[in-house]
Amino acid sequence: MTPFLALLQDASGPKSAAEETFQLFGAYSLSDPWFLALIPLAIIAVWYGRTRAGRARARVGVIATTSPKRSLVQNLAWIPLVLQIAALTLVAISLARPLRGSVETTTETEGVDIALTIDISSSMEYNDLDPKKTRLQVVKEVVHAFAVRRMTDREAAADNIALLTFAHYPKLVCPFTLDVDAMTGFIDGLEIVKNRQAEDGTAIGVGLAKAVAVLKGTEAKSKVVVLLTDGENNVFTIRPEDAADLAAREKIKVYTVFAGRYAYNGNVFLQRAEEAIDTSDLELIAKKTGGRFFRAKDPKELEKVYAEIESLERTKRQTKHFTETFDLYPWFLLPGLLCYVLAWISSSTWARRLV
Image (cartoon, rainbow, N blue to C red; front, side, top):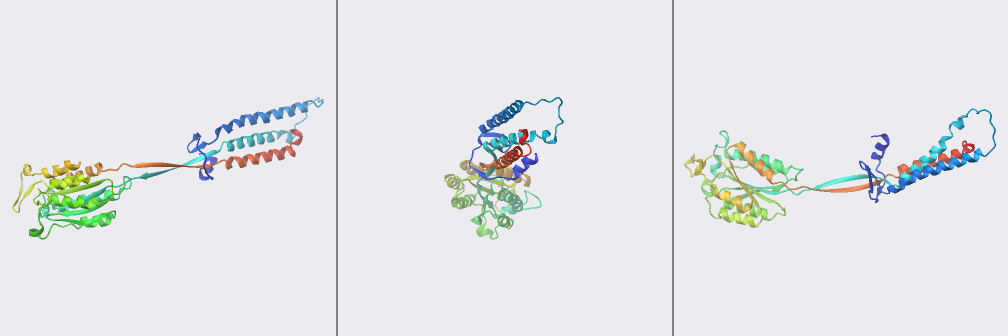
């Protein structure tokens, strides 16, 4: 970039209401480009005037036998002409109204309201996902990372997230928030139910209904429940299919996740046969609400599940462009006037006898 263009780039100039009619290059344009036609006309007019003056001088009878040596003034006789042409050219450019455009881009995005709903029944203490960790510990690590990504994602809009748990009864642990530290603190503090006789169970339908009720009060256009469990529904206060109907009516999408390698059979043992696991309720919920059902048998699969949910729930970005224009004509008009004044002074003083 030349120093002059760099100077124009730094100096915005006054804001202009003119429209960019003729694009030059980069952010520069002209509003009235037809004034540039004055440049060749001005050059012709100045040149024509000079030739007439030359003819007038030629009519003076001067007999010279030898060519006199040219003086310094005569050698500089071209300066007034150049100044006149420069003045007319710069004025014509200023009349063409050069502009510099400044484009501002704003991105409008809307996040997704996500209700993370996690099973904390006693079966979540088993370690078939990871031999060194309970199911709940593995789930907390994966959900923690998921919440951080969703709540701090500025490119696709940060999400409001609520945290709910369920066993025999549902509980709203943390209402919808954008405070990632608060949310991750609640996730990390989740524990398996302590009073197993009164609170234990797997109330999938009740847990989902509670999540729907929480989401119903939000104003987001996109509402999602991510419900994770490691067992089959065994509390029928609200059946899973009825809770799915509630979610569908509210246009809430539900992603269901079964986390566990084996099925838990009462308080006795883990059923080693994978085919004995009944996930039909979870599949039905996902189907009715437009979500998807996932199965995870180890931490890596669970991470992939939440990563896929994250990729599926992306809001489209809406980008708006605002263009401001700035007048640059003072940068041409003022030098043009200066050139004209210098040409007039020169023609009236030291170059008077030569023009």
